[in-house]
Image 1 (cartoon, one colour):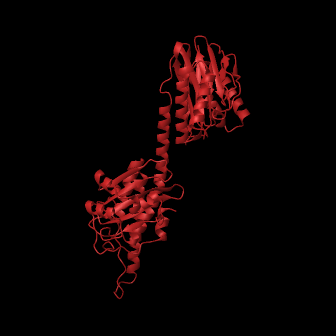
Image 2 (cartoon, rainbow, N blue to C red):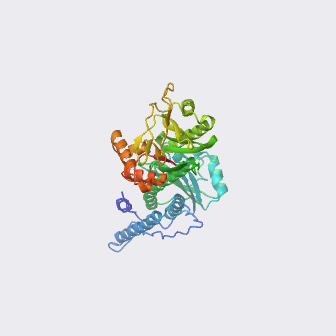
Image 3 (cartoon, rainbow, N blue to C red):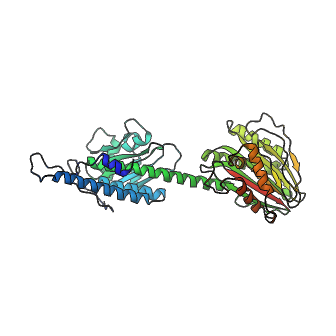
Length: 473
């Protein structure tokens, strides 16, 4: 439902000249950038009025409210970051309800974060005082905890005079100099509870009915806008975390050239690659995939990569031992999890690659004379092995050939069956132009463009893709 539709369904009935409380509030520091409409209340019973004057006043007030709300939502739509949107929502709402101070608590109910608490006309120390009140004793705390009878806005028109309220709440209100509050939840049907808005009055007061309606419509729009910004914020945060978990710079070892590509799915997945130097100018090369998506997959990915690095340093020249240790680690720390991995011990001076895989896709070698998948022994994924029986495989690439280690996300992203996806990958590698074969990065880019429907477009697909290209001189 749009803003205009919401207004038309419940046009205001007229705004009093003061707040509907015995003492109109003293609004300290309020300086609305958008003028708040003034409406003429219905004439008292028995008073004379020009024909149609009341209807005209009602219509003028309705148009003014609609204009105000439109300007506020347009201003909010112009905010591109989460923090700027939160400050805009808090200040715009204060203008609508006629309050001078307030706070906004962002705390998504799905637990995915991020969380924020910002104030309007309140210093950090004052926000800290408010947070010392037990949550169950305050309206905003009850909203955040999901307690009963917290589906809509809640007014506390006289905090100091209401002896039924928690003493600590009344004490903090007296210390900070506010006497009333109005609390509005921020929720959407799809995302659930996002947070809560609280506006504070210096004297006993509460907003009139038409202002409640306006701020309610605005809050619904604001919640939808926040949902979009939250998704962007989480995606950026997960991408930044995932980038931290990947090698910042690939090692340089005589005899080989390395290139890596990683395409992230929108929700973030657990595909990863790694390359590390080992004694005697050897290389440890790995690709793997942790199940799931989002923060849990990123965390599992980081643990797998860190574990494999440690085992590669200890016994890197024995790939089976490395993956056996990784299997034990996964079984002890995350017994319900499963993952795939391929680890290769590479000696560039001898042009040998010794590797073992756990439920992982076979490497692909490509060069001027051949393009073929390297035959591997079969093994179940990590976390599903009762004992390790699959031996390692030794492979000798020819000079000028490139070996591609990749995750199965590359195959799934094609949208084809497994056999067709493998055939598509083979065809892409075989079709790399000769002029590009000297550069492993160019080989990787050509394969991705040829295999994936969206090329290297990071916004497409629902699967992570990790690709490690190793060219032998």
